[in-house]
Length: 505
Image (tube, rainbow, N blue to C red; front, top):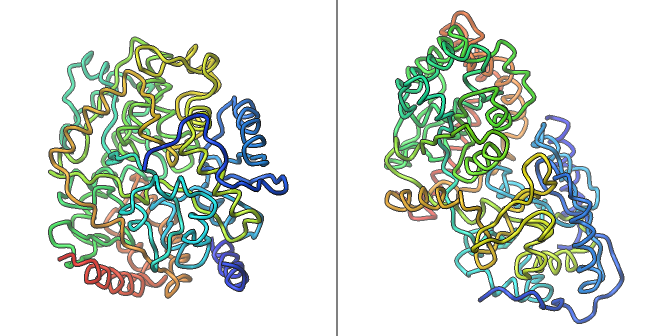
C-alpha cells in the first residue's frame, strides 16, 4: 500500500509537468475526419475477463480499424486485490488510454491529484456526438475543480445494497425472511442446522459489516461504507460522530463473535479467495450481505436458473429497513483517460463509439448475436447456458457505457425494474457521492491505518478475537497511533466545506 502511494505521488509529479441529444444508429461514421496513424489503445476494466473476450475484441477491432484506424486491447485486473492493482496502474506510468472510474475507485481523489486528463477541450473535438448525448447536468455532476475528468453513464439505476439469500431453503425449512438483524440471525441458524455442509454467510474479508450497519442504524449512507469509522447521518449530515469505538460498534462486534461461535463464518474466512457471489451461485453459501445490489442479484438469478433451475433466490433491499434510497450518482460508472495516455483523442473517439454506436455497444454488452445471445420478444436471451456461453450479458463489465436506447434485458430483469420502481417511491437525493475527498494531507496516515484495520479490525469483524471489548480497545489504540484522529479531523473539515459549498444542511 505505502509503495503504491509513493509511486502514485511520484508519477503525478511527473505527469503534472505534461499536457493537460440522442444516440446514433449502427451506421454512424467516425467522429474525426482524419483517421491519422493506426494505433493500439490500451483499455482497462476491473474484474475478470469473459471467456469469449478474444472473439469480441476481434469483432470490435474490425469495426474500429475501418471507422477510426485503431486497434483496442481490452485488459482486466481480476477482482483479487483489484484496488492495489488499480493504484499501481495509475502510478506506474505505463501507457493506458481508457480506465474505468467510479466513486468506489476514488475517482474524485485521483482526479484532484492529476491522474486523469481533463476532457473539456477534447470532447467537442474528438467526440462531439458523445458530448451532446450526455445531459449537461451529468457532465456538471462529474466535474472536479470545474473540470470534466470522466464520461458518466447515462442509465439511471439503483445500486443500493441488500441481502441475497436462498429462498428455496427458507421455504423448505420454514425459516423467517432475513429482513432484520433478528430474522437474519434466525435464518442463518436454520441454514446451519439443516445444511451443515454450507457456509451460512458468503461474505469474506469482513465485507458483511457494511450490510449489517444498514440494519442496525437507520439514515446512514445508503452504500453503508464508513469512511475512517465516521458516521454521517442523512438527516443531520453536519453532525459527524465516530462509529469506531462507540457502544454500537462494540455491540455489532459482539454479534460477529456470536456468529463465529455459531459457525456462520468459516475459521479461515479472511483467507477465502472465492467471491461472495460465486459461493452463493455454486451452493456453497446461503447468504450474501454486502455488495448485492439489484443488478448483481439479477446476475445471480440468471446464473442459478441456468445451472440449478430447482433453486430460488430471494432479495431484501436495505432501503426497506432504512426508509430511503438514493439513485446512482453520475460518477458511479465512468471512463477516464489517464495522463499516461499516448492517444487521448483516439481513445475518446473510440469510447464515443461504444456508447453511441449500436454495433459496438451490442458487441461489448451482449456478445455476438446468434453465438452469445438472441433477441426474443424484445428480451435478451442467452444462447446455451452459463457453462457453455463464453460471453454472458454485460460479460465485459461494461456498466459505464450502457445506453438506455440500446439496452436489452433478460426477462428476469423485469424483477429488478420492479425493485427500482419501489425504490423510486422512497428516493432521496444523493448527498454523499458528490463529495471529493482529498487525502493528500493524511496520505501516510491513511496507508498506516489501512494496515491497522487489516491486522486488528478484520479479525474482530469475523469473530476471531475472544475478548471483543479488549480487542476493540487495542484496535482503537493502534488506530490512534496510526493517525486516526488527524484523518477524522481533516476529513470532517473537508466534509463541512463540501456541505457549505453544495448548500446542504
